[in-house]
Structures are given as C-alpha cells and as structure tokens.
Length: 145
Image (cartoon, rainbow, N blue to C red; front, side, top):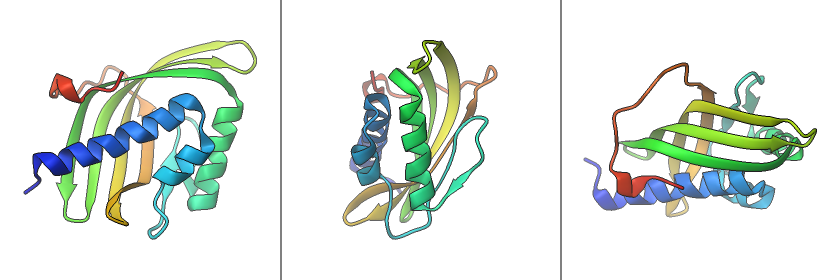
C-alpha cells in the first residue's frame, strides 16, 4: 500500500521533470532519467526514443525547436507497484517555437518512475493528444503551476 509520503516523493519527481521541460534544461532533464534500467520516451507524432542516449537526444531536439514553454498540469494521479510507480496527468502546453509559431495543446501523459539511488527516477514518458480525455480531479494541493 502506498503512503502519502511516497506519493509526495513521486509527485516531486514528476514536478522536477516538468520544470526541466519548461525551462529547456537538458542537464536537469538528464538528472531526472534513470540510469540503471531501460528508458524510453514517446512524444506526440515522433518515433519512440529508446535508451538513455536517444531519450536525451530527443529532449535536446525538442528544446532546440522551442523558444519558450509553459506547462500546466491537471489531475495528477499516482499509482505505486513496488519499486515502480506511474503518474497520469493532463498537460496543458503553451510553447513559442523557434520559427515564431505558437503551439497550444492539451496532452494526456503517463510518466513511469522507478526507485533508484534512494529516490524516484523517470524510466518512461509518453504523451499524446488528449482528444477530450479527462481524468478525475485530484487533490488540488498537488497541481503544478
């Protein structure tokens, strides 16, 4: 059974991931991803990135194409299964692209974490268009703004 403290630690890791995303911080992003288990990432419309080097390269490409990003997260839900956990969350992304275009989209994301080095590290991120999907409301104290 998961504890509230465990949930808070997982949500803190999830927030750290989105802060690195929002800030275009590749070094910070590198610190968030697991090093002892396989990792993968699926961005909407992209081929899956498999392996730590490929995952960080795809984030680097994404950051190069964005002038700025702003993320709002809604209804984050945490699930724990032993040494693994995942967060389901709605991402509200507003981005200014390097070419001057603006992007505004709502995505449904799954972030999978594993226990590593006494904390929670990301092993998989998958985001896709929400297409009207919604998640039940979560505790409003757990939202990232």
